[in-house]
Image 1: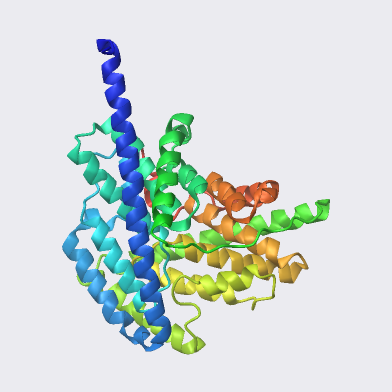
Image 2: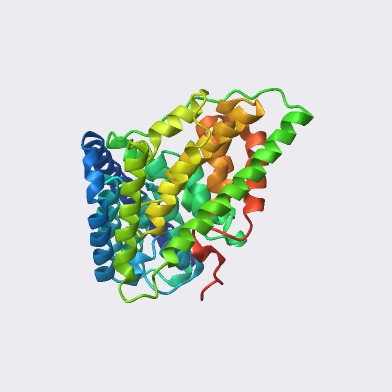
Length: 406
């Protein structure tokens, strides 16, 4: 029996929705798996050959040249995805996917301090928008699929599908985006992306659950002070990165001189500290901070400097994992100074600095529960919320504060 005419368009739209969301999730999972596999190789090569750091200035010039060749559209990073979600008619170019993959791997291969979320989200958004063009998806539907692509990329690269789904809704900084209507495609795409990535055998970092101490007025005071301090630290990270990104841009040769000088500064810093601990993602530093053992109080500041110089100079990669690292190190240091539980505060710093810098507090709240256990929910909500509010109208994603595009 044929369905009535009035119901056929709804059926076709539902089927198309399902196929597109599944395709977006699978492409995000496979591209993230390829990236994580390649990143692991690049990190291993640098770890075995730390002298590669001396090639970082030249690689900075190479990345600047590649960036200059591919054009501004592919250079917008996560801002291109956010603008698309907000209604920008300009498409996210397909060239962005291989461009950000290659340049991020070069950054890590030669010792830059960068992350991975930006690469995964940009690859997912680029592939998704190319698919949407192929199927002639109208603009009013495109925004929903781009949210799903951002969710799938985030969920796949970190192995956190719930946080990924919220990230897809929240990253555009549009309050109307956080709805059940948007949650379903973001959640489905994020789950499929994470599942697809895991099927390839790619693993993710696992962290132990955090025990919650008995809450008292004094402990709430220390938690509030920690949230304020992390919010201020987020301002330092954001403003430092934006300042370096603007330096020399008005000069005729600024586009290649800035990464060259930034790479040289990173070589000098690495040589000064005599270790490559602060290069790369910083996963060993995160493990140390979350172990509950004391870490040097100044460690977070050094990692922050390495990351701000790397990203502010034009090297490629995400900000999130270094923010996890800096936040965890700061939380550990804060706990040591104030006599609190270093493991607890490292976990809170892990998620709160990301909330302050990227303006995604709900994502970070869900992330805290997904990584460290649901018992952290109330404490995480307090510290994440304070850090988010203290950092104000600043973000590592400039497009969040732009007017909605039509």
